[in-house]
Length: 94
Image (cartoon, rainbow, N blue to C red; front, side, top):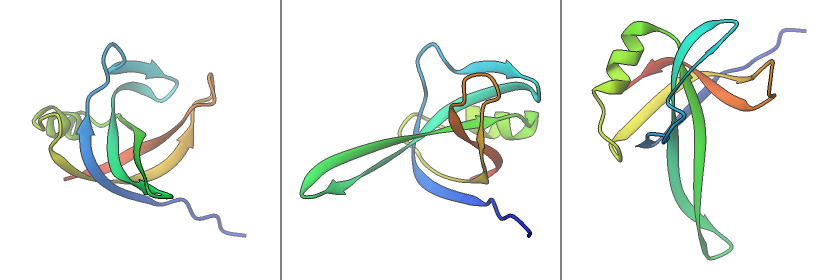
């Protein structure tokens, strides 16, 4: 059985206070959230989807973005080996 794991999300850049960098077994990363604003049952809903950027060139692209700027991220859904936190491992960012 071939597994499929491809994520494409868009929204607004949301830089995380005090949690913007880290390191895992894969290497050093920058992280941020993609904020998606919508509605659920007539109530405002704000989702913050965690993204980790390992590639240095993609990191530069991220740092050129402004808080609240529109972003499109593609990658794969992963879970941290240590904490089990789910995140998108960024492969492209625009």
